[in-house]
Amino acid sequence: MVTIRTFEKNELDFLTDMLYESIHIFENKPKKEDLINSSHIKKYHEGWGRNGDTALIAFNTDNQPVGAVWYRLFNESNKGYGFVDRHTPELGIAVAEEVREKGIGTLLMKAIIDQAINEGYKSISLSVDLENSHAIHIYKKLGFEEYEVSGTSMTMVFRVKED
Image (tube, rainbow, N blue to C red):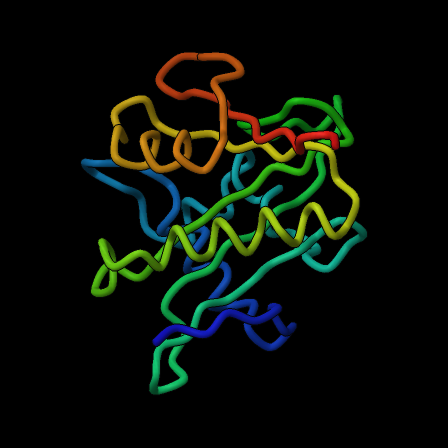
């Protein structure tokens, strides 16, 4: 049994751990502090809590955090890897290695999609490594579509269906 709830400020260390885990590097992955504080990554966590920042945390039955999903708005002068426009938050997700392949990531994705819709967003985006075919398959099943390919990554977008 997994429970998902809104991120609390005292969980920022866990959120940055998950940010590190979400960065798909197969070999020679830099140390956490070096990677998450690099100029192209620190924009994803610096000053967390600004308008548009949203995160959800998954907990196991022992109330231990086991995964997180989050989104943040960017603009044309500070684009993220999955940037579409300044009205589309870019999301990231990670699940602790010991609980992967158990559906927790899918539960988190469904919860953050619902959250985005409830907050009035018409779309959300993400960036995924082209070699991460398992994740791409899941994102497509959830309704994300290919937006563009740049280098070794693909930007995907989920658009809210208008009734």
